[in-house]
Length: 150
Image 1: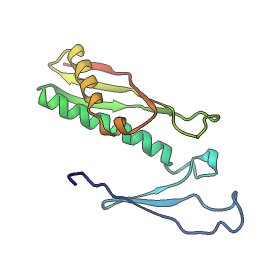
Image 2 (image 1 turned 180 degrees about the vertical axis):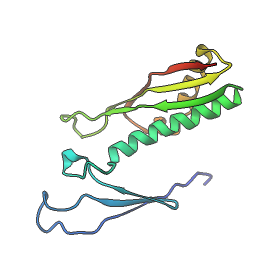
Image 3 (image 1 turned 90 degrees about the horizontal axis):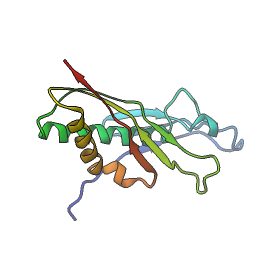
């Protein structure tokens, strides 16, 4: 089979013997050589100081859009000099099964020597090629702001 293979590891130790409210939600996620301490969302008795899986899912969608856009822009000869995305994900409390239902990526893209219409077109093209977006069942929208640098 011709495919890309991705691997990660999750490690946790502790005890659930004292019940649901008592065990630690903190665990270690490793991908490649990088490790990250992660916990559950505070709403699920996790440590609010640590990232949670829902945030990591959102970060994956945002990062994939960034990388797809940079590739498309570079191939089109557009000089991108800045990209910032303040993304949000919504997981309704009453959704069954519980899941993130909607993601909004809000990138602000700064370019030199290009017009906003071209950047918006390239952002749509990048979104159409984003692997993570195609892997999600949540609706995903991209609300782009373009800044043209002097």
